[in-house]
Length: 179
Image (cartoon, rainbow, N blue to C red; front, side, top):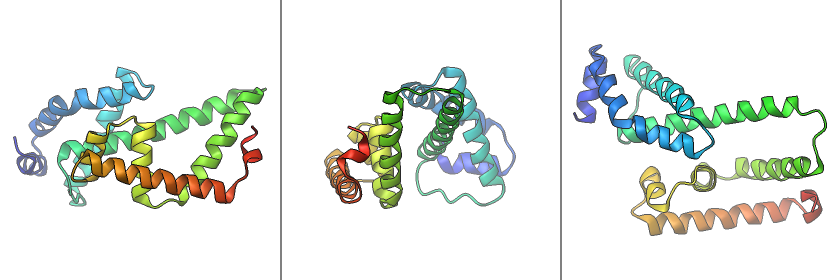
């Protein structure tokens, strides 16, 4: 079934399109979430939420599809999972009464890196997040970002990392990292 056909079926209210998307993309989403500290049950919930987002965007005529549906669903699932991990981190952080020195040290480093990541351009931020946090291969990164090949992705990732390193070194001193 083509992507155009899927969109057409959803617009007409045919739920077979969702079944098709579920069968075609479920394993990919489970794999991504389980690689990133999740369970299959969590992956199922996230993927169902992503399908709902997709369905609602089509039904409200707000979907601007610039990639394959599978890429769109992967990105939505990834963003939903990141939000879930952030929520979990905040909740678990609130429950820790006496954090150890090591936990504070990691927290400081993470906060500094997050601040600098937010200052990067959208493309660099996405590349670095996909590569370092989602452990995406260069080939997959090239596909996700629309680059010609893995070498282009590798070069772009390298330039983005240099930019992030320069930003950190310019704005922070080693003692900021509690070394």
